[in-house]
Image (cartoon, protein in one colour):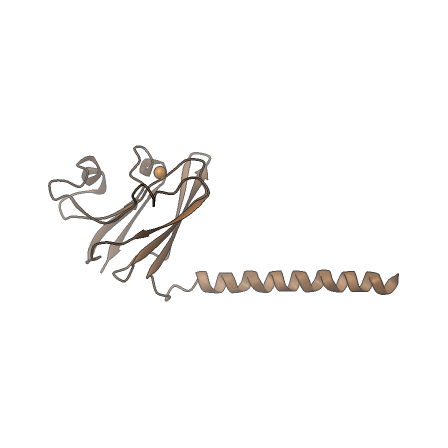
Length: 154
Ligand SMILES: [Cu+2]
């Protein structure tokens, strides 16, 4: 009886220990800012007043693919575009990237626009040259509710 209790307790402690170690490892790898940005993770989800939009790490000239996970209850899409000089992101969005306002470097299509609880891979199809970029969901109203990250590439 006592022995059995001890074994159960030991097993529980081991399980906890493994769990804690696993967590620590995850934090180490995701927090490594010097790691390659070849694959960028993008996670979206619903919040009380819009959408979450977590990008890790920030894309660089080396970025080749975006792993896009949708925890939201509705489908989403993705565009990464260089916003050309003389235009703000809002202006380029209204112009749909026309009139030289933006250059799309990655864009999800029917297959790579994630439905709820889906993870897809979106490829970068044009060189990410130095400049100002926006990474956003092009579905009307969505970037205004949080699905937007603006970043610079040196
Ligand atoms: Cu969206």
